[in-house]
Image (tube, rainbow over all chains, first blue to last red; front, side, top):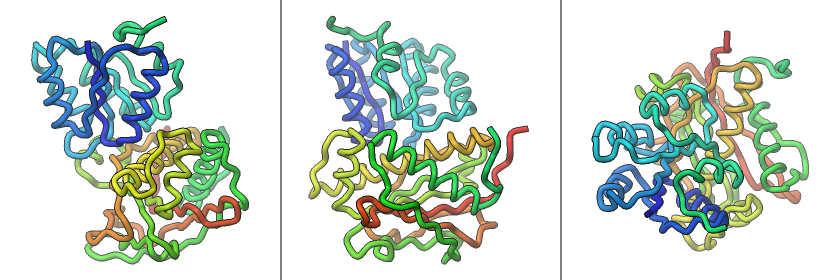
Length: 128
Length: 192
């Protein structure tokens, strides 16, 4: 099962991927730098996705817009999604949960590894 | 928390200076070698866009990134910003700054990496700024994604149309000016 990271910041993608590996995550990690590429990755890997990380603020298609698209389609509606954002706005958080009431997590940048671990535990394969 | 800063651009600029300083210290262990230097300046604009030129900030190739702020989600969807933050960094210093902040390393010759790195730092500063403003009683501002450029942006940067002034904040590390932030901001509504 794969983990998909969709974030326009290459550094944030690298940092997140490195942190996941350091936490012992053994899933294959795929990355996309925008919403369109993220959607393509998700479609290509349907049935083999453990978890998706979506950046909130992205150009063209935001993380919330991408998530709204996924939630509307029965095949992708139940995919576990963790929203990642630099903004601690309560309104943003509520918008994300309105778009997807089953959102698996809402993580603030810069994230702490232990916070991330708590959020991914139910979905990722983690070596002890 | 009691707000020690006045409402208005000068107060917001002082919050930004304190937020960025705190972020650099806590996340990167970086102490500024002197207090940030704040200067109020007139906005030079055309067609309601601020003219931005990084070469005015440093005597070397520079990169800058822009994050816009909105008073709520509807304003963000309509792209009517209440303010904008522009962060300028000397291009060759981006990799060093990221290293201090424990980000994955980038090559000093990697232009895409430098643009992305400056944007990531700007996003981080903007996030801390918004959080600190909120702690001081302002509504939680929405943030745009970042856009990054080398030296200048021909189209300029959109800003709140009621603004005529901006603040320039200079940050000094090891005695050298290493980071410059520019802020324009209309009045931010307070939490009731």
